[in-house]
Amino acid sequence: MKHLIGAHVFVEGSVDSAITKAEEFGFTAIQIFTRNNNRWASKPLSEKEINSFKEKLANSKIKVVVSHDSYLINLCAVDKEILEKSRIAFKDELDRCEQLGIQYLNFHPGSHGGAGENEGIKLIAESLNLLHQQTKNYKVKSMLEATAGQGNALGYKFEQLAKIIELVEEKERMCVCIDTAHIFAAGYNIKDSKDYKKVMSEFDRIIGLDLLKCIHMNDSKKPLGSRVDRHDHIGKGEIGLEGFTNIMNDKKLIDVALILETPKSKDQHEDLENVKTLLSLVK
Image (cartoon, rainbow, N blue to C red; front, side, top):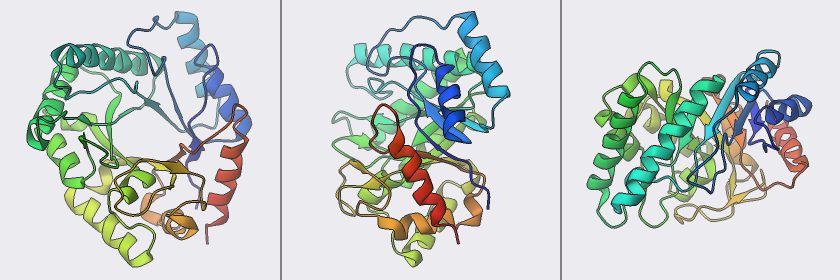
């Protein structure tokens, strides 16, 4: 089996620097930030930067690029000012992905801030409908990420993700990302092989495997059902090599991008080690 595999790659200066690095690492799938992930505002991408990114990508072995949105964005914020800022920033994220030819914009659904699950889900869908209307004919898909369910975070149950998609008008613009550390912390046991099959069967029934386009490959520092989001290196956490063996040998996932978000230093040597570990699990 030939996997689409890689990691979140640091951008240094221009966004095209990530493509250069990913090629050196031998990645076939990557995730990047197209703007500062801890600021509301960002300078526009230059034409030179856009052209260089697209040219390098076209000449690379990279098949899938995912952009992760800013950590500040909350599409169901109770605070009206934060909600408006979030929508403006998310529109900018969609614009950047479209300019660069990036297929997917990955985002955490949001935190309902005490308003409740139903209200939060409604507001996320309302935000997405508004943003999709503002970006008609864009090819980039909005990728909902499953969460661990810390605090008031939504998206820790497959049903919640399905409900958001149900309320989105342009369903063809939606897809999903599973984060292994998140769903494990949310109570989905992917470690045991029998339970893993049940979890994936449940995902397929509730959401549909055709909508699963990315898996964030992260071990979990915290135990099953802890609802705490803490990433660890492959095989070093609570999921262990058993859980990742299940994923690496699941033929149904061969076209799904496997992207590491494990702790890393500037040279990203840990990513290379983790990719090697994952590929060693293929039977």
